[in-house]
Image (cartoon, rainbow, N blue to C red; front, side, top):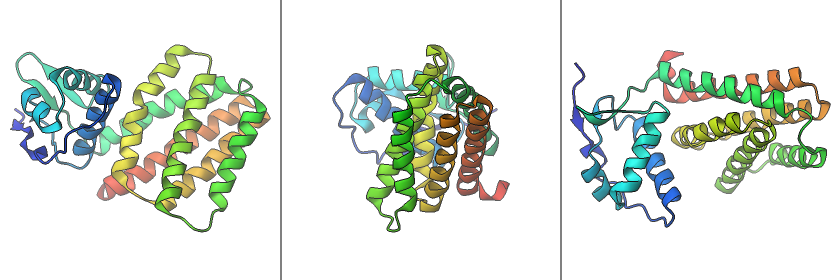
Length: 236
C-alpha cells in the first residue's frame, strides 16, 4: 500500500498572479509539475484542493481543472477514495514521456514535410544558425532559444494536417517545457538542441519525409538522454 502524505511540502508556494482562466490553469499545472520533477511531491502525496487553493492563491475551479489535466498526462492519480495524489515519477516514467513524444512528433514531422512555406523554413533556419553562432551566452540568450524551440515544434505540429495529432502534441507541450525548466540553465544542452533543430529544418527543406522523421526521432531521443542525465544520472 502506498504511503499517503499531504502536500504541505509546497507550503512556501507564492500565490499565482495571472488573469485568464486558461493561464491560471496552466500556471498551476506548471508549478505542480516542477514540484514533482524536483522530488518535493513523491508518489502518493495527497493534493488537497482546499490547501493548495490557499497556498497558490487561486480558486478551487482552476485548481481542479489543473489536477484533471495532470491526470490526463499521467502525473496525478484521481480516485473517489483517495482524491488526487501525485503519481510515481522516476527514470521509467521520464523515458515513457519521451517515448510518447517521439511517436507523436516523428509522425508530425513526416506529415508536415512539404507543407511548410519555404520562406518560413529558411527564416527559422537562419534564426537557429544565428543562435548556434552566438559566442556569448546569457540568460537572455537562453530564454530566446527556449521560445524559438517552442515555436519550432508548434509550427511542425500545426503543419502536420492532423488536428488530433496537433492537439496531442500541444497537450504534452507544457509537460516537456517544464522538464526543461526543472533541468535548469544548461547552455550545452540548448546548443545541442539547436544543432538538432537545424538538421530537422534542412530535412524539411529537402521535402524528404523519411529524412524529416529520422531527424526528429534523433532529436527527441537525444533530448531524452540529456534530461535523464540531469534528473536521474545514476540510472544511466
